[in-house]
Structures are given as structure tokens and as C-alpha cells.
Image (cartoon, rainbow, N blue to C red; front, side, top):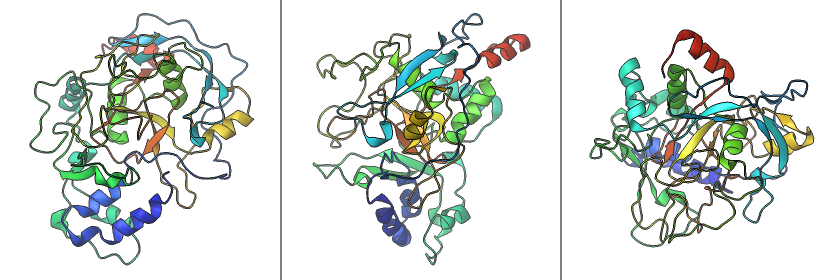
Length: 382
């Protein structure tokens, strides 16, 4: 987590209701890309995954890949980084083994998410009425309750500044927007009409999980995501290798120019070359939810265990003082820029509160061998 963040958030919350919409903005802004931090914390709780040394690694595909997915043969890799740009949450680099799985070749699109919503009548977190009591529970004791008229559905959107600003205060380029949701990513005046092939955004972790259950899949673990993103390139900095980002011949969709002084938005999925496993948008475009809870010292714990098989992260959220309950985000987005965020590196870790979406967060799914067999036996088509 960014140093000094919690004290700034408390101050924001204490002022939250002096103007309309500030209440939820202050709470949700705290969850937008809160990266890294914490010095020498105690170990997290036992992980959900564990070493399974006795069983052979699954490398052989059970059969044809479901539509839009590719088979990722299992194997061992070095997770994390000791590189120049690595932060403490990415260290130490440690050996991990994962079993094979199917993964979406591209992030879930607007068209695919629309199919899910139409089939299930699902309502996303950003479209639901705001829970006043939940907001109050996240505020300092004694803060006066908000005016119910200000608590309307919405979400966070990128709001470029008119001039250069200090990059230490992300609240300058994030804004709470009433009516922002997956169908209107930047507010009621925006629309996804004609944008079926763009990655769906403004989806909270809960929304992504609901989609995966409907599709007979799940979110990737952080280890599965990084293994797949590397595309067979051991130790590479980026999904395409070690070559630096080239603005003249871009390898991914990240923020160009001086951040955050001009508008930016996602591009259609698959706009750039696939990695070695045939996966698109593993760097840039939109951040992607993973299944793991974020702890800044997870890798230190895993490193002490030797080669870890199918790690699934800590069993629960980080509840230490000053920590925020958050899920891991991977891949970077169209807002990453070398002057501010190198999140498009394959080892980069970020986090966000599971009940919050934003205009640069999407997801992709995976299907395990067991899920594939269940789908095949049931004659499923998705």
C-alpha cells in the first residue's frame, strides 16, 4: 500500500459529506490500485494451496479447448522478480509449479458479459443501491451519516488533469461518477454500443466471480496468471520478452505521453500480438482480477516453503493494522506509464478492494481439467 495512504484516506473520509458524491468516492478511491508497502510484517495465515509433490504435473490437455480458450500446459517457473523495477511485494523470486489449465485467450468482452447478464438478470455492484450502513462502517467513529440523496449507484472513472501534477496523490485523476457501470464505463453519457470487442470494465471482484460460475469456470490464481503471462519465457520482464516498451512500435496498450494529462481508454481485445502461449492483453489494456487475497509478503512465505505447487494465496484478507482487504490485480492497464506505473511487467502486483470496480479493471477466466470434464459430461457449450 502506498506509504501514508491510510492517514490520507481517514482525512478524506472525515470530510466526505461536505459535498455531493464525496462519500462513496472517498471510500472507493482508496481501493483504486493500491500498490505495495509494509515493512517486515509477520507471516500471513496458511495458504489455500499447498505442496502436492507426490502427483505428476498435469501437462496433457484433456481434449479440445472450449471456444475462445487455449490450453496452458503445466510446469515449473520462477515467480516474482529481483529486477531493477521490482518492488518488495514481488520479492523474493521463488519456484512454483502449476498444473495445466485452459485460459481465455483474451479478456472477457462487453459482448460476453452482456450475454451473461441477459441470461441471469445479474445486477453488478456498481448498479446496485449504495449500502449506507456499509459506508458508515468504513468511516471513523463519530462521522455524521451521509445524506441518502448523495448515495447513488456509480463507480470510479479516470479523470485527466489539465496540467502536470504530483504523482503521489492519485485522487487528482480519479473521480466518483454517478451512473458509471459496465454499460456506461465513464458515466451515463457514455455507452458501450458498438464496442462489443472491448474488454468489459467497471466490474467488481464479486461480478467477475459471478460470471465465472455461470460459465463453469473460475478466476485464475495469481500463480496461474503469471505463469501464463510469461508465455514460456523464464525470467523475462514483459510478456513479449526483455525489450523495453517501444512507443514507435508499441507491444501493448499503455498510457502514452505525460501522465495523467489527457484522456485514455481501453482498446479492442487482441489489438497487439499474443505471447508465446497465444494469450492477448497480458500486458496493458485493463488490469485483471485474480482469485488471491493480496498480502505484500506472500512471496516471502512461499519462498520459505521451497517449490510450491498450485499456490492459491492466503486464506483470507490482510487484517493487520493499516492494511486493506484486497484482491490481487495483474497485467497493468491503459493507464500504466513508466513515469508512474510499470504494472504491465509480468511480475507486477497490484490490488483493489473486492467490492469496487473502476474504468480500467476487467478480468479473464480459466477452466480446470475437472471443470472441463464436468462441462463435457454435461454437454455444455460455453
